[in-house]
Image (cartoon, rainbow, N blue to C red; front, side):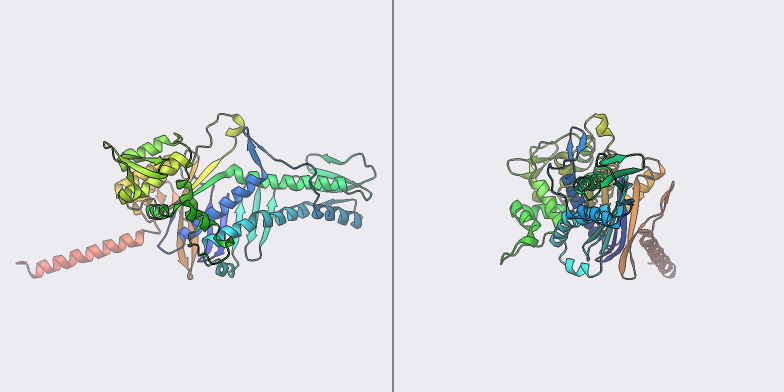
Length: 474
């Protein structure tokens, strides 16, 4: 799956290839990394909600429910009426059916996406003036969204649907290798309309499955995780709930501008209901032992994350722990309590589905010593092999170089790692995939700074030597 953004605020062009299991976004400050990540998170979140409303997952299978006696839409009837009036012997109606599904997406998906954007971007009305566009591409579908015009255009692979005139009312439809044929006899359109509605439902189901086969859950961990968690904890989950519905609240009450990804993050941590699981135990144990030197637990009585330093009986809340602990602890909490391993079952039909969770993390290296950055990254690479896709923004040269080493040492497959550089071009931001081969990634982000420091060092040494030669007694 690929997601492309165009004319979205400061970002003129941006593309994420979500078929990669580890995506790391590099770039200068204030270039739009978080902006793009939050946008794609919200887009995926609403796509998943839409898809889950279309299909129901049960006993290892996706089931699609169509309520009995469902009213036939006027769009389906209009297709039949136009076909009869044109008096053609047959007609392919694929374009008409895709148009119906696209219109339904505008109401069922796009309206909710608008609310998410209004809740998250205070300048959303200004963003719309630039005519932003999104494209979601899967192996079987392409969905183009024109936000300013509120238009969705869907292309979906499905068996071509053909209307065909018939003198017999006996055969209603027939399906062969190339066509799903619906027969129309005289002026009778009720049964053909029902069959067209079934085709519309089939197209919606196929699109939903395209999404859910790739991703079923998304999570967002913002920068300054500890400060956000500690600050919002003082006001309880009510604040986050109000912020999520800010756009629909009317009256004199002033709701703080907390973006939806951040309120989602806090709500996930503050409403944990299940005990810790072992789905990612190897990774969490590594991080706790090698970096935290203690363990992270959720206290169900106090409804908060606690840190227990090894060899003590202390229980520290995040505002009492070190900055390093308080930044890493939310990541551990997500892996222990919130994100689940979706492939626990051995059911053969389940195994055929690629059911990823996607975890967005801003600056995971924040407040970490370089040695701990490398240790954390190694655990993340292991995590990316466990059906958790990681999308990170980083300013760390250590992370960049360690990933290069792992590529060269074949610990990290080139086909699974995607380095993205976001950079300025003509006063806007674009993204580009960084060049990579068996020797790693070309450094187009940190190299200039490193060279500048080395040149400055050489100049300082030269001045020192020159001064020593001129004044040896000093």
